[in-house]
Image 1 (cartoon, one colour):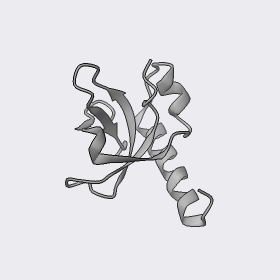
Image 2 (cartoon, rainbow, N blue to C red):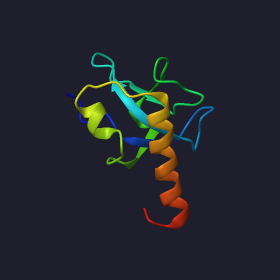
Image 3 (tube, rainbow, N blue to C red):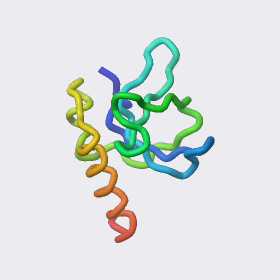
Length: 94
């Protein structure tokens, strides 16, 4: 199992700079993170990004337990988890 799964990260580089994603998987041989947000980047077609191009924002989100166990999550679950996280930021509950 990979400890990175389920993390909420913020992109530091590229077109998606400053956007939030959830780590859905990690490529074992290359170390690339596979990121999805459930809207533009679906779980079925995640974005590959190097670890150095993202920053960990939160390691505990609603879907992290499912991802840690290797279960699949839907795009809707991912959108809800990211929306809940963003709502916490705007309210200052982070």
